[in-house]
Length: 132
Image (cartoon, rainbow, N blue to C red):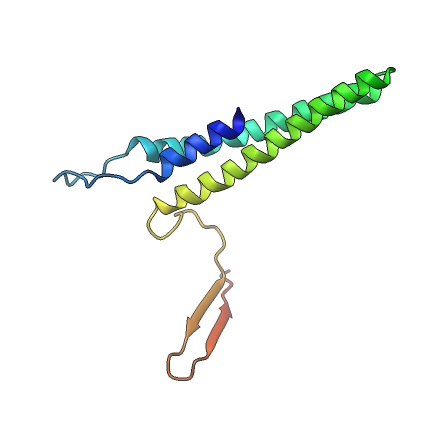
């Protein structure tokens, strides 16, 4: 169920967009909002599934019957897989959300690495910049 929802979310996000009308104001499309806020929903789902898996693991350890222990272990395994799936969906949505921001996010607190290349010599210069 979660995998289908994540796949549907990615299909909607990657769907081709039509050319904008002659408006000069920037428009927030449905898919852009879906990607922007969907990453938070899938992140919350990751945390929720992880907590539920931990609870099932505790129940499995407390079960006195081997059959009950196996039942809770299967439930914990399913929840861990759901958490991993939602984590992958979150990572994909974060990357898709960066696509909508020209130049990347505006709140980079620490970007010390500068890379430049020299066409004539074929060399690359890497510099670390620290500001105080």
